[in-house]
Image (cartoon, rainbow, N blue to C red):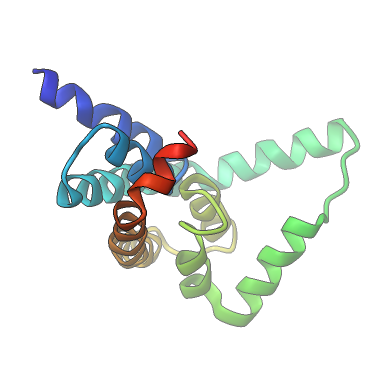
Length: 149
């Protein structure tokens, strides 16, 4: 039971911030493959949930911005539009684990009208790719990574 409780933080952190999964996995003493699997699973859970609710979340954010008179375009939103124009859903999926969060990357793809199935497919390959790479880097530089936790 105690071993299973180690998995929960890695999974939950990965649903909101991808790099948090490998950092939590190394700090809890999980194996490399356990950490990769839980990180990917956490991201894909978030992608699954927000691919269904992405447009509603976007409408809520827009209403919030209008109500509080916040600017529509910011440095971050311009960067996202630039990525979308240049690379489409593949670029958004590629940069989601690095620059965006699984939640925000999924909402961006949903707002641009990408079908759920394509969102899930592209986020899956991106999650697998970056899951192995980022977890490998964190485990490779474990001593340095643990200093920041």
